[in-house]
Length: 575
Image (cartoon, rainbow, N blue to C red; front, side, top):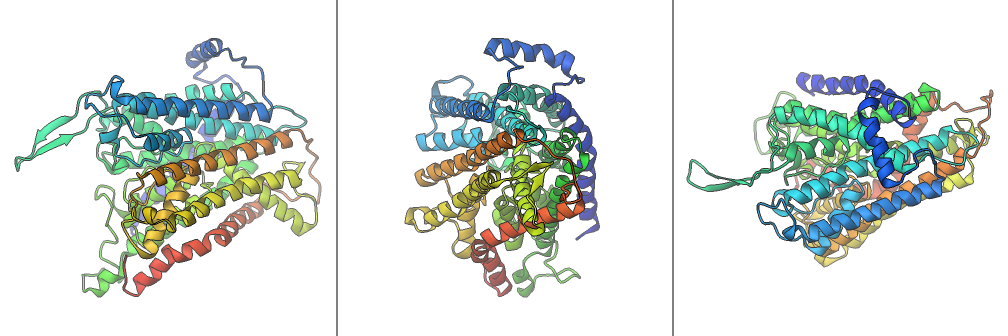
């Protein structure tokens, strides 16, 4: 590890700590319907939206109604987005004359953006018109993120309320997340991005003649406005195929730093919001501490692996550094503007959260460096996680940890003074096992299909990792790719689409059911026999449960993929 790299990583951690509390306080005020500094500006627009849509903001919903509203909103959104892509050739703002998107790719993309996955099996600049980018993709960048925040708030209400029947109003939470949180930050940071050199226009693509006399097409478009929400909303879908490695999406190292901070900011702030709503800030810090520990462990592992480089190049006689590592580390697949430190940070952050944006190609990482993003997603992206999804995903492990602790001390497990019974544990396990089934089940299906194997760029364990990474990314609603898999085929478009649906809604609905069940219970006072969930001891238990469950579940698959590839690399063989 270099001194410069350590300073950059510490600066990121410090910046995240500094934004967590103020953002958490603001989120609490927004979703507790308290007056805040944006109320005079946004309040009239919010009330107008309710009147136009016939929403009664004071009418709260049971968990079943809340779930149905969320599901119907997502279904309608997917249908509309599918229609926009299929009719793209006759819709406006298409200066390049791009044709209609194929049916299977339209299905995959519609599901992808509605589920906050933003998996892209296409090149954005050569497939999607400006109208599709703005009215379709960018719109869902906002509302899919707002949906995740709304679910996290609803689950939090269920955990902290006593003797209640409702979890809030989905439409109110959706509107408030969009108007008070996502839009204001996006406008401010978007202008900063434009000032930093990001493209933001509706001009046709520019044709340039190079010094050698060749013709080059330079894409234009509304990039900055989509870039900021893709990060803040942990969406990840890039305007360009190269995503945040493209200079129009990520002009400099400081914009890359802001982007990774945006990815974690809301997820981190939600843990502070949870502590305030629970009226015990230590509850929020216990979860935040577990997330931070797992983040740092993955970041250090990824960074050190990439900094160490490839030992095969050493044996080939290439000049080595004094530390006996590949000189300069592994720079394959990385932008020289960002280097190893920013690339490792970006890869770790984007897969800890359900973002999926990349500023380097994970396919070119060392086996262990590439395993870190893969393992992050296998854990369900609960390490700060996507906007909302990280918090309610972490609650799955919290319930399991509390249940295990109850078994260890011989008492009925409790959380926030409420008993955790078999119903809640079964629902939490349903959410967890649905992820495992999709990640491993679809991968197993793909590796025995000859047509699927034709899409691989590599053989051996690296090829297995490419397929495993794709279905893990889709199920975890991440959207990043290993970049060695040509996934724009009917098989992968359809199966990855269903993996995204299962990964999103088979977690949300069980957790809303848990929240509905917990809201009805009455909290009991803390006694000498209560296992406290606001201490470092509980945070440690939570980390151990996450790692053990993830290790036991996915170690066989990892041992056949990146771990085997690492051992073979040490023996002098690459794939």
